[in-house]
Image 1: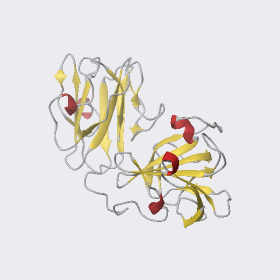
Image 2: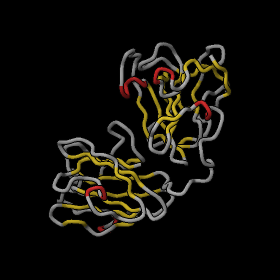
Image 3: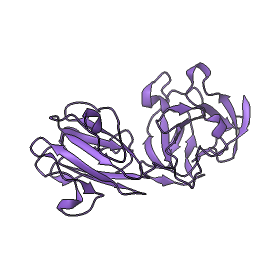
Image 4: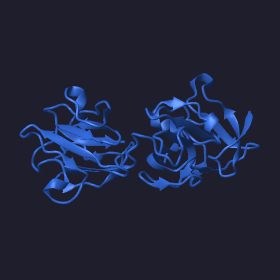
Amino acid sequence: MANKNSRVLATGSNQITQHYGNAGHGGCDLVKKTNQLDAITAHSDGTVVWCQSGIPNDQGSSGNRSYGNAVKLRHANGWYTLYAHMDYISVKNGQTVKKGQKLGYMGNTGNSYGAHLHFEVRDKSDARVNPEPYLNADLPGAETDEPAGYTGDLTYQAYTQKAWQPKVVNCGDGPDGYAGIYGSALQGLKIDAKNCDVYYRVHTPQSGWLPEVKNSGSGADGYAGIYGQDIDGIQIRVPQGFVDCRVHLKNGDYLDWVRFSKSYKDGTDGYAGILGKAIDGVQMK
């Protein structure tokens, strides 16, 4: 076991009981020094983009369930931290948190063989990297200087079943991690970004690509779409940054993520969707 200071435990010091990369381990396992339990705290300022609770100990489980009660944060540099196997969590999806804020308490949930914290760091592409150099250090890029291309928190909303559905901030898994209602086609879309303007347009089989909308608002020019016409394509442009978007097809599944930046692109990789197939869910980050 290795001892290191840490800013993801309330006491600040910990033991590493399993290192990153051991037998394919995607994070590092931590307990409080001398094998005690501790509260879990946010590594840096960020936004909760995914969380799950109510998971018991389930040894041998896989996928998201293997994380047990868990929280994932997105930070100003576009990187992520993930905290798993907690006894309970004290934050919710879409919530903004500060460095050092309590996220929950160490536990033994999911695919766990004893109470500890499984801690991950992921880069902008959501790929796992060795978290151990960051246990008591900033993530790449100054925390207060958002890098070029960072749009900040995205807020988006879908119109379906003749009503605007709840707003979503960023994305995650579960019913509050996407905009829309599976099985009911989207007929309107609103998008806002925290730190810059966002422009967007949608495609319908009847009308083709509709006029571009800047940010969201009220009235006919405050959303993209036409009530009564199903949306089958989405395009976004962000002059000062980028947005990642993927869509869920009605009676289908999610398509691959599409990255949108300064200008619209032609071709099938220039929009999210498949023309002729209605979209019933959308996620952005």
